[in-house]
Image: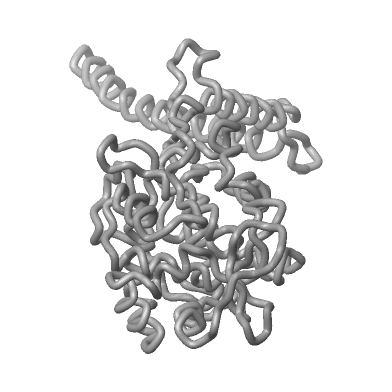
Length: 374
């Protein structure tokens, strides 16, 4: 009996874990799945009707966008005004003009020459060349003073010199160009205008280098450094020799008298040198040699007029190119060969325009600008 009782109890103990294990395992795995499904359903559907609904703040995106815009604006202010944030302000980038920039200035001058054809014989070209010539012709190689570096004719002491009478018209003509291109110095602008005038009046190409600086009134040159048209050969050699020129350059540079005219209210003289005062050719030399000249009978200073038409004039210094034995061979050469004149004229003018200028770039870095005819 006791044996049977122990056998029955052992059987119960053996069977109980099997029953307990099955029911417990079932409860363990079923309950979490139900909870997961309930959580999933709650996340997927915010209401029983199954419609989607955003539970977050509907203005959040607007606030975020506003914050980003404010940050961007603040960064922009920092870039433009770093000193407001305790940072050192960056120095502005230095503008370094290139060939194209100077060509743009040339083009504007050329366009103004075309548009403003109401001066003298129809062009400001001759007076622009005279401005560049007189700004450069004050150079003294012994003292290193004067020359195109400075544009000191802007000031009364030099601008009022008798030889510079009438050049205010040229300076005023270039003021709008200076306003349009404030980075160019007056010194460089005046010389560039002279280059443009020569080329636009169908003269030779004139190489150009920038690098002139503007100076104050203290650098004005004394009166008397420019040629006096009433003088003779010794005066011509003294004036041009002071700049470092020889006879060939003196005669070649005198060829600029093919352009423009004299005015009684400026120099006292009157009339043009050639029949085409707005076109540069070797006609000046031809007329000197081929025409007959006589003293003009009038109340003005001594000058010559052509016997045939009495419409042309020559100055006493012009006639020296025929009378002087050192000058005449070059006068004859240029009268026969316009290309030879252009070559020597271009070289002499290039030298003249660069007298006294402390360039930082070499002669091999000169530029040649395109004219409106190219």
